[in-house]
Image 1 (cartoon, helix red, strand yellow):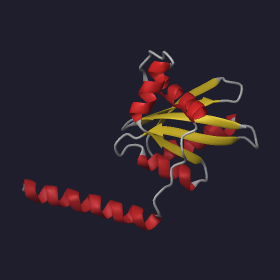
Image 2: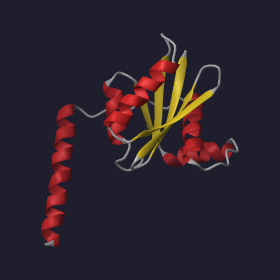
Image 3: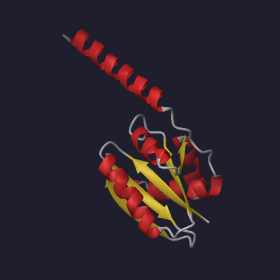
Length: 147
């Protein structure tokens, strides 16, 4: 059996909604940092029965979702990063009118269950290091131009 976790990611926090096999939701908010990621996995582990598989689903939100996606993927949990437009249309189709972070997380969990999005593949560690170096170089060039 699968359990689906919808995650609405923002700069400072992540709103999570765990959809259990009995179609009940459990929701919680965590900080968007490694401590919050670890707390999220502990929370889900306490609610999911042994043998059940997690599938985490989040929208592509600039760079805010990347750290969480890599963290979860590195621990062997299936992650899907979906197009926000598709989730918006799914919500409209299913008459989900609330537009809060908690409601978005629930919508993502339902979308994951119903649409079965493709698993996301994290970049290799060397690619991640290269991406961080390029981002730092871009920042330094922008600072130099500002001076």
